[in-house]
Image (cartoon, rainbow, N blue to C red):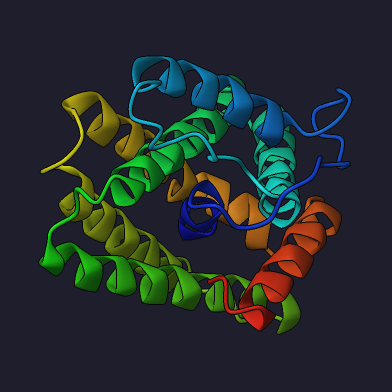
Length: 214
């Protein structure tokens, strides 16, 4: 999510080329543009959000996350097939709103420290995902769940003073799905049918880590 927050603050540009969910173009970019248009309609007089957008690298990462969630949900009767779309929409909406608050200089001095904590927590979680993919039999559900819960807690602490309860609910929906044990087990078990898609996501995570975007 921090990667999207960085994009919402003006990093990158251009159109996405990745196809997700059988559509054309980037599902993430389409959702982002719709959310931005809605938000900008409310603040058009301030100009605070006129350059909000989602860059190619972020769109690819989120599109691959969506493709992974969609693949798992379709093959697992315990998961709601509509949830992956909700997760993607909520990540995009939350990230743009957080970026807007930051660009509008509404964060308090203590929030800067919280943002850095979020960056570190998301970076650590990304490295954990990469490690579980690259090192055989290293998957530890409890450890990854703990990392996800730490990210949830930090983001909630950041947004509650600035955004509505609806935004807090969006945050919970994202992490409820991503930390669901049956989802994690389906993704990371050694013989998982979803490893090819996970590999695409890991490639994006590695690029983000190398570029210090996570």
